[in-house]
Image (tube, rainbow, N blue to C red; front, side, top):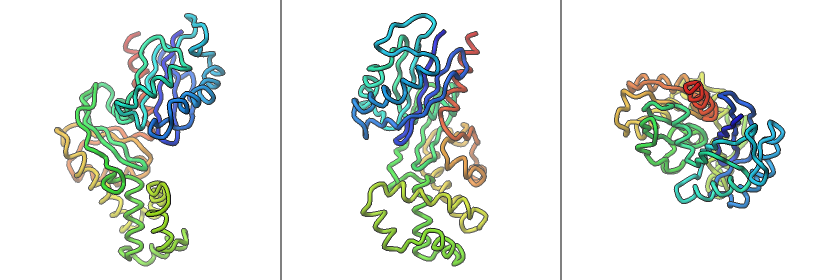
Length: 301
């Protein structure tokens, strides 16, 4: 029996799927393994202490130090992670190989490539991530051929949770929304302008703070002003990012991430208005990656 291990890693969590004969043998979650936030030793320690015990309990998968046999082989490993830039890929690969014995392919690549494969498979398309941040790429069915820079929530990240939250808070503070919505916001959060300025400009992780207002947008989506705010955020994402890719009005455009899933209706409305072809919309890349792995196995057997 052979095993393939898939991983989709962000800054806060890593989703793993162990695949055997095209079916899921185990699903595991560990901490995020962003090499810009963790050292090689820290990543290796997370693999050893959090991943390995669950792999071994699931099916006795061997480690780098154990003897391998035909009945239990980790054949391939595909790790897609935030922060996996060309200069950081060797760091992650060394950390993984320290405790995992891989007899075949050991691939470490960006989370954007993972999203593209999950959304498009082996077909050309445009892949987008809409979560706390946002990103996108043009994909030819094998590799990323163009990637408009995301630029983070200050300069970019249009349509993301952080930027939608930033727009909401700014509109609240500048009284650009109906008074009923402003009052509802104040009753829920009890934040002064000084509190918000401190959190955004002086405290760590302002993007996470701003994205924390996404539930308020969701709760008030039936309000025309909030619905328009969300739609305009998505329109800016599509116009400033997706429309830079050749074939944007012909290729399927897929999305993964919580924001795309929560606000699917306004997102699809804007896409139709802009003359775009709607592709897959999924919560997490790992689901699409599992589907692709199963399809490949079935195609060979």
